Image (cartoon, rainbow, N blue to C red; front, side, top):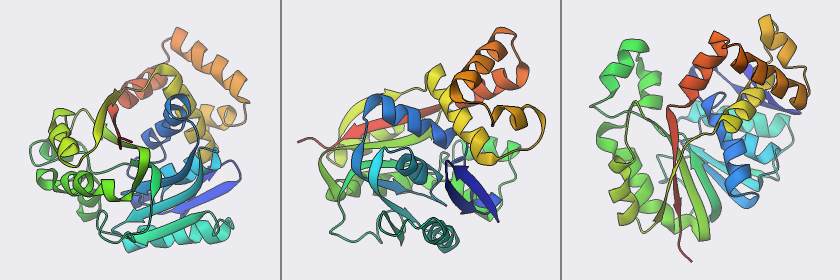
Length: 264
């Protein structure tokens, strides 16, 4: 068991349950802060251990958090995080196949999620890079975009007027055109694609380095820096073309966020 630290909150998880929530998932924090601000009730779909949702909660971007995942083991870790950090009054969690296990009276102001990024046309290339065992496919593979379709056709029932729905996707697995038809069919207003800005990537990496609590190499030093000093170090790394940093920025740039809204 591991713990990803977000300020004083420890998010517990098993390594194989991390589908990117500790890395590109942290892009949500600067993006939501920049474009939307604080919401009352946030919902993380396809949550796994809920790295994204807990980070939004800890960073003051939502007052209440609801999370759901089909994997009981992931929700057991959510329960442990809630109990160990005394968050029971702020967090609700459900074992749910997409939205099937969500009570009908739940209502959300912001919905986020890191769904599987690959369908049958793109997963083969992914599996050449990553060992695609059963757990990896559960995190990464959406046959015929069926999970996305079920999500987009049903999420409107749980939204307050004006609610925002933002899912993270991967350019190596999809194009926004794959989802716009489902979005329209589900009665949502498609707002557009959000591409991470350099400042977003810089802030997300800072959250990740501090969360992973790595005690070796540059990360051991960086995690102790106040943000302003870290920002200077990040800029220096860019200026000298520090390869690990350049590679990281490139890897984060392949993710995009599909922004939708429930019309008032």
